[in-house]
Length: 130
Length: 500
Ligand SMILES: Cc1cc2nc3c(=O)[nH]c(=O)nc-3n(C[C@H](O)[C@H](O)[C@H](O)COP(=O)(O)OP(=O)(O)OC[C@H]3O[C@@H](n4cnc5c(N)ncnc54)[C@H](O)[C@@H]3O)c2cc1C
Ligand code: SF4
Image (cartoon, rainbow over all chains, first blue to last red; front, side):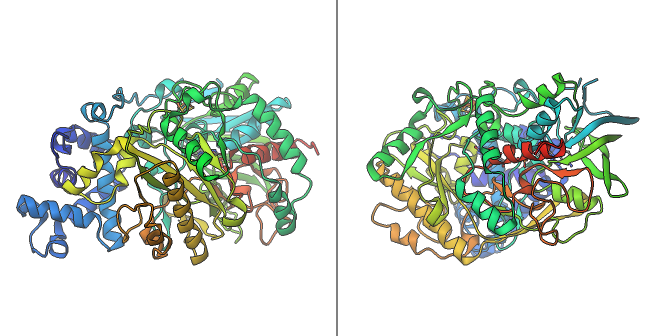
C-alpha cells in the first residue's frame, strides 16, 4: 500500500511554480522510514487516509473513479475538496495523511532553504545505553 | 549501577526507600525533594534517557523519539483533538516551552472551597521561589525574541492586551525556536538536566525504558512497582523489572498514565480517572506584508493573563516547526501549496482556555489511556471568543488578514470581517484544538468518594502510596501548570517524609 500512500500524499502537495512538490522532497525515503519505524496503528492510519482519499472522488468531483485514475486537473480539485470536506471523520482521516506529507516536505533541505530556515541535520535517534 | 537502561533478558530487581514512577515535572520534583532529605530514591521511567545531543531535529523525529504514543493520543468525544505529552527521561518538560507562572491566588481559595485543600498557599509559593532560583527563571532577552514576539509586543502597545514578556525556566535562551523538539543548546531547564541527575548524584537510581505496569501491594501498603522494559526503537518487550520500595511509592506518570496505572493495579474506585480537565488551545495565523520568519526567536516570548478571570483565556505567541504550521493551512493540491508559498509572512498566536468541561481517563487496550472529553456550548463560545481576541491582536500589530482555521467559514478574514468569526457555528468538529495542559484523574480532596488522594497526595485507604503529578490537581488553573505541579509534588514529598 506504500504506493497508494505516496501517490495520495503527492496529490496533496504538488509543485507550484518553482516551489517543489512532495515528489521532489524525498518522499520515498521518508515513507520507507515511516513504514519501518512507526507503530502499526500509525501506518494503518496513513493507509486508511490514503484509501479514503482514493475512493472519494465520487463525493467531491462526482466521478466514480479512484483518485489515481482521474485526469490531473480533476485530481487536484479532488485533493482540495477532500481535505476540506464537511464530513468530519473523512476530513480527520485525510488530515493525518496531510500532516505526514507536510512533515516530509518541511524537512527537505531545499524546501527549508526557500523559507530561509536552516536544514535539519539527521535525527540521531540515539539514547543512553549505559 | 545508578542508571539501568533497556535490558533484554533476565529479571532486574532493585530496591530503595522510595520508588518514583515518572521523571517529568512532578516526578523529578518529588524525587529530588526525597533525595535531599537523605532518602534513597529509585526513579522508574517509561521512556529512554536522551541527552540534548540525542534529541531529534525534525518534527517526525520528535514524534518518534519524544512523544508519548508517537503523538497519536486523541480525545474521544464530539471532536478528536490531540493530547500531547512526552515519553522520555524529563517527561514533558523536555518538549515544553518552559513558561513559568506562579499559582494564582484565587486557585487556593477555589481548592479550599471545593475540595477542602487548605494550608498550602504559602508553601506552594515558597517552593516556587526555590524553583525559580534553582531553574534559573528569567525573561527572554530582547535579542532572542524574534519578529513574531516583537509583533505581539507591538500589538499590545497599540491595543492594551495586558501582556508581558514571558518568564521561562531557561538560562540564557538564544531563541533557536526548537523548544518543542528539546533544547539542544541546554538553555531550557528540563528536569533531565537538573533534578534527575541530582537524584543520581545523591545516590539514587533510575530505570529508563521501563514503563511500570502494576503497583505491588502487601495488604493496603504499596511496596513497589513492576513491569517490563520496552525497547525505545523496536518497542520489543525486554526483561522484567521489579522496583521495591521500603517506604513509599510515588506515582507521577502524568494525567493520562497515572490513573491507568492505578486502575491496572486494582484501584477501581470511581474517582480514579475522573475529573480530567484541560486548557485546550488553538492558534490564529496573522498574515503580514513583511516576512515574519516565526521560526527565528524564542518559541514563546509574549503572553497575557488579562482575560483569564472573566473569559478564561490565556493568550500567547507560539512558533511551531514549519512542517506543523503549514499542515494547518486549509485544503489540498495546488490551492493548498499556493497558500504555503506565503509561509514566511505568517505569525501564529494562540490562546488556551480554562475550560469548565470535564472528562475521564480510562484504561484501553494494552494499557493505553482512553480520554473521553468534549466541550460544552459555554466552553465553545469562550473558545471562539479567544479566536476573535487573537485576531484583533494580529490586526493591532498590522496584519493584513487572519486565518482563523475554522471549518466552514472563509479561509481568511480582513479587519472588518471579524463578525463572521464571532458568529461562527459552535460545533467543536469545526475547530482545531490541542490539549497540552492536562489536569485531574487522581484528584486530591478531603472527600474519599470524590477524590483519589488526600490533600497531601496520599492515596485514600492505602499506606505508602502517593500521587505527585498534574493528575493530582482537582481543577484547571488558567495558567501554565508546570510551576504548580512541581511545587505540589514537593509538598507531597515532604508529607511522605513527615514534614508538615
Ligand atoms: C508542547 C507542550 C508545551 C508545554 N509548555 C508548557 C510551558 O511552557 N509551561 C508550563 O507550565 N507547562 C507547559 N506544558 C505542560 C507541562 O509540560 C505539563 O503540564 C507537565 O510537564 C506535566 O507534568 P507531569 O509530571 O504531570 O507529567 P510529565 O511531565 O508528562 O511526566 C510524566 C512522565 O511519566 C512517564 N510515564 C508515563 N507512564 C509511565 C509508566 N507507566 N511508568 C513509568 N513512567 C511513566 C512519562 O514518560 C513522563 O516522563 C506544555 C505541554 C506540552 C505538551
Ligand atoms: S528557544 Fe531555543 S535556546 Fe531558547 S529554550 Fe527554546 S530551544 Fe532552547
